[in-house]
Length: 263
Image (tube, rainbow, N blue to C red):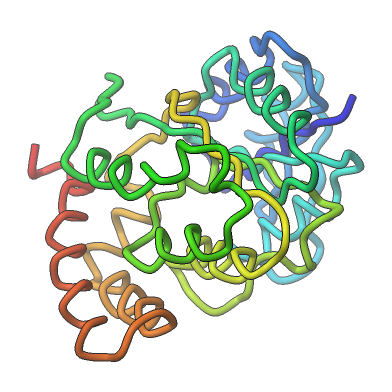
């Protein structure tokens, strides 16, 4: 097999089994394992049920540390970090791998996505519409290898959903994620990778569902206002500070759609 799903599990997620079942239902099979820094009986029992190996991070835990650990334990060329709360459409692997094999030097491949809110798939929130508009230039295959285009896309925000991304481990520098941000760690990684020669492959079809719930790290961070400050720091990588401040204000207003209470 050429592809691996590395499931990052944390504590005792009630959605972990649903995530695993969506990976086992893929039309093109992949290797699957669980990576965790919070080893416990709950995770072990679920892994045993589905006959999936568990890799325990012996070092420091945390979002970026766990992601880097999971990527480092994979043995295949292509790896997707599956988040324990999310689910994948049956054709995710098949469509992603088919697109990758048509490219010369893929860096990452990612699809559009929908959200899971209270158990229902939501395809058209304000934020999802904005992200699709931002990614519109990458619908054109000729732009996949353009550093200029991908950096202009990222200069307006982070439209790439991390669990929708498959990495070409032979064309990325390790560690991929820096232990710097709480919310914008993936955006920081895309900004770094956008400088490399190769392709950012984008599939406009939603091939996975990202769950939004009150206990998610994203929801917690939004409440704490952490993301606002981190977004501003990222915008400053692309723009002068006055412009970065203006864009951040607009983007933050849109991101409030992540709050379940706003539905």
